[in-house]
Image 1 (cartoon, rainbow, N blue to C red):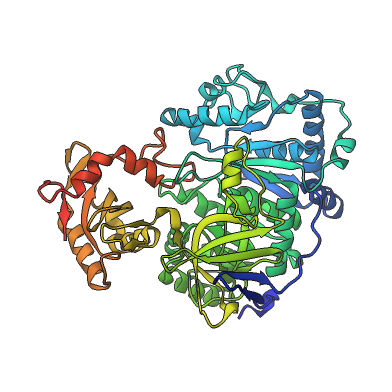
Image 2: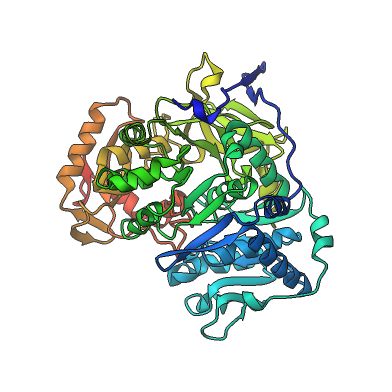
Length: 590
């Protein structure tokens, strides 16, 4: 049903070593990659000058920037940056916008470095400490924000030059006034694969974020790799309506460069999968037929509900759709099935529903499921030029390590972590675990099996795979839990701390715990889960509902919205002790 996409079948080469280590490589050759991202911009400004490259909402419609217009603006700003002698990375405080994109491309065009950070670091006072951490790490030479009012207090933290798109308080100069007579062509000619393009912060889910040194070669190689697995991106310029933030590698490198490398159009979605903002995403999707749709599973779940009630939205969404791509977690099978049904009923053909795997350090795609799959969860096979090393970690799972031209070489200002990140052969130690979809057929690819750093042992010595158990419990609890933290290191049994959903957020607050009115429903869900599993490592026997949400200011939640489990457990150690106190009135026991 996806024959129209010209997909290539998986082709995997396997090497088994005497020590049990397995090496996997693609059977396809890696094509040449461009020397820089600026080459892409020049190409499409010549080949398709009037095609929409970037668009953002403006009233009822869109403000558009063609490829030719983008190149003019990029070169103007690049000249201004060179003339001002920027010394240090350009720190970008605000979210996705045309100005954000043009500033980023201008810096990359002439070999300067940008560092985008989560807007909430600047806009949420409690998160300001995270911005101060970034300030010390980056030591920026220039700071940019969308405006100097909302971002004013954050801009005041910096003593370097500042630029904004909208001046309201006079704290900064304007991006529109940035000009200079520097030799842009000469600087552009000197940009090559080893030139640093940007610094991207890791998620910080287990420690303080590290800044990944991301080169032009990492990004251009990754797009060459992706095009081998998804040849339709070169056959038809991709059109995206996308909200994924550019301070993350998925939105800012994978998706943005996918459009730029292939002469596509990126419509910046100013909505998000949050309930209060998803209506805007629905509105945006209803205005533009996209060829590729990227989202997290909860976003697709919201979208399915909206399309069930809106035939016009279904028609526009599926009209030109080549691919549905989920990331961040596995797509629920019921959502997958509804998307398949809607596609066939609406367009009479199937898009590729797929996912991949990678990290900020891998630029990001290292594995890609580029064959049609029958269900969710598979992350695919190595892309050309990537070698995957699978090592038995002693708990029965495979520790994933990778090497290749698209893999990073160092963290910014952190030589110690840079050395610790690779093994004796130079493979990046990802900290993730994988298992084979079918051990007898390498072409079926790999399935993500959690983060090794989140696993722990019970007092019995039994390993608990915390990442997978967390997903299982979220599925079991449904709307009763917004998130859960799996506990039990050194204890006799597994327990969970629950951040309540709207259906369980009422009760009496007791020193950080919530004596939850829905405790009976939570216990029933725990019992149902326990009946479908076996063994102490997979059975949750106690729970405690937390009264307070995770605190971004203290580092309990990362810029991606993920929980920093180590930080949270350390800050709430007293609540973990209460979780294991059978006499505590807030405890929910199986």
